[in-house]
Length: 201
Image (cartoon, rainbow, N blue to C red; front, side, top):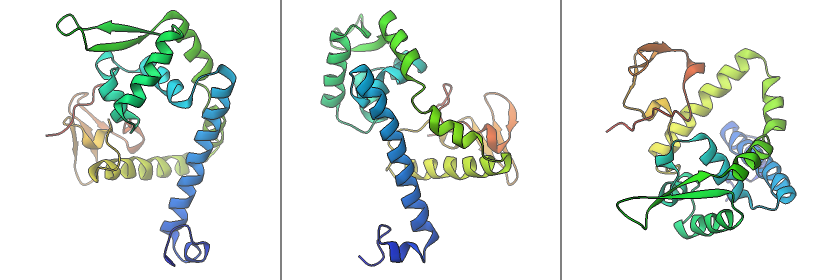
């Protein structure tokens, strides 16, 4: 217990603990910004996240099973959120022609309008990050992208679409390379959410 990351006395002696607690504080900021937007428009945070995800991702990712993995919640939780969004006419269910129980989710016209009013909720955080010097931004992004990949490899993050886990990515001692784009990538060009991502076997 004395070596808990949440023990201030231990934190003072351990940089990794300070970083973990710092990440927790930043995640709280994200939740606060999302809740503020949720209260204004009368949706829950997960409902807003679902709408924003659908707006920017291909249709095969926009189903109950994948959304449950994406947001680390149960399928019933996603199904309940979808029922509300459907009732409010913010989404359209596109049913499979081969299996009437399966469907992908699309935004309705009203849903698209709502997303255009809500997907800026993280802007206050982004504006602060943008003010960091370029070298700090690149170093921070390099660390975050590696951490996300490691969390996925350790089964803590269930879904990731970053270059490091993609079959098209290769790395030499000094460079990153995308075999789909046929180009070398700078560290700042590593993607965290790539629409062409295909998982390595």
